[in-house]
Amino acid sequence: MSNQHVVVIFPHPDDESFGASGTISKFRDEGVPVTYLCGTLGEMGRNMGNPVFANRESLSSFRKKELAEAAKQLDIEVEYLGYRDKTLEFEPIDPMAEYLKEKIVSLEATTVITHYPGYAVHPDHDALGAAVVEAVSRIDEKHRPEVWMHAISNNHEDDLGQPEIVHDIEPFWERKLAAIKAHLSQADGMMSLIQSQDQQSEQLERLKTERFYQYKF
Ligand SMILES: [Zn+2]
View 1 (cartoon, rainbow, N blue to C red):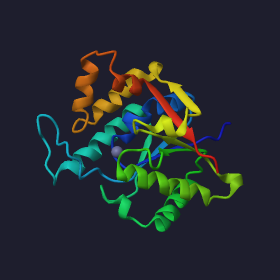
View 2 (cartoon, rainbow, N blue to C red):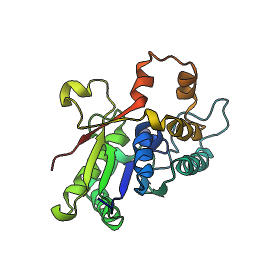
View 3 (cartoon, rainbow, N blue to C red):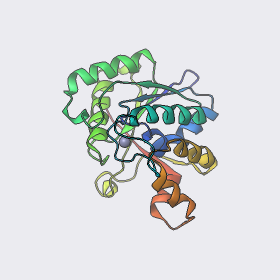
View 4 (cartoon, rainbow, N blue to C red):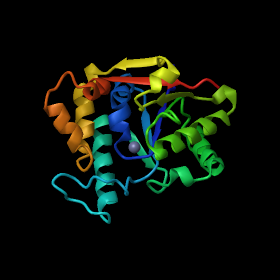
C-alpha cells in the first residue's frame, strides 16, 4: 500500500525508542512516514540522569530535547498530546478517545502502534493503550487503521499466546541504540546493560525483537 502512515502513540518520551524504534526504522526504510504522538513530557520520571543533571522543575525540558534528538535519529515527526505524566489512569476515557480519534483521522493513519492495555506494566501505558483502542473502534470500518499493541509484562504470553507481528530488528540495531542513547536522562541503566555485552541477558534479547499483537475489532 502506498499511502501508509504509521502513528505511534505512547505516553512517555522514550517509550518509542525502547518499544518500537526497530519497527519504526523498518517503516522509514520503506519510505513510510511515522508520527509519534507522545502523551506527556515524562515530567514525573524518577530518573534525573546519572550523574544527576536534571531536577523536578527542569526534567520536562530535558526530556523534550531528548525526544527531539531521538526523533532526528529515527527520522520521524513528534507531536505532544499534552497530558500530565502519571495521571492518565485518572483521565476519563471518553474525551481521551474522542481527542485521539480526531488526531488519528486527521493524520490518516493506516497503522497505529500503542501499548497492550492490561499488559503494559505502567498505569499510563495501560490507560493510553485502552483509549487508543476505543478511539480506533469509533472510526468507520472503511477508514479504520490497524492497531498493533506492545505487551511488556512478564506473563503476557501465558495469557495472550504468540503475537501476530514479530520483527527481528537486528538490521536496525544501531539506530535503535542511537535512539535509546538520545534519552540521556533515562537510558543509563539500559546502556550499561547493553555495554556489558551480556548476550545472555533476557532483557537485551527482548530489545532485539519487537513483537506486537494485532487488535481484532
Ligand atoms: Zn513509558
